[in-house]
Length: 141
Image 1 (cartoon, rainbow, N blue to C red):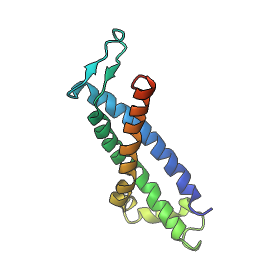
Image 2: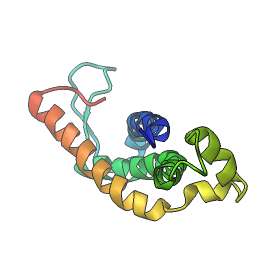
Image 3: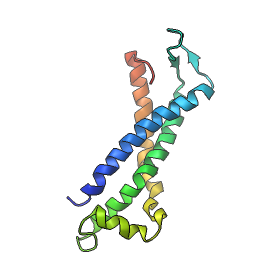
């Protein structure tokens, strides 16, 4: 059960960070992206054919945000799971103040290796989702 107190919020933060960032970033980039062609289905419905490159770049940005949001939870989880119960007996509650004595940036230790794990996940997941939506005839979100 060690690490559960940091794993659950980490999972929630990644899920919220990925989904909201992907959608919002795509909405912000779409009007400025070269190669966007409006499908012209119904006036004002906003549907358009989006290039694969838009999905990949949006996924790269999503990976950065997800990694940044998850980093503090990853650091705390690692400390709690490596502890034998003596240093952080109450898990997350004891680990956070102890780590913050080293400054807030200590929570972002291991950011790059974490991005190397989460970045490819986002780069595969979201463009694949977009292609699946296209194949099923669903509109872009």
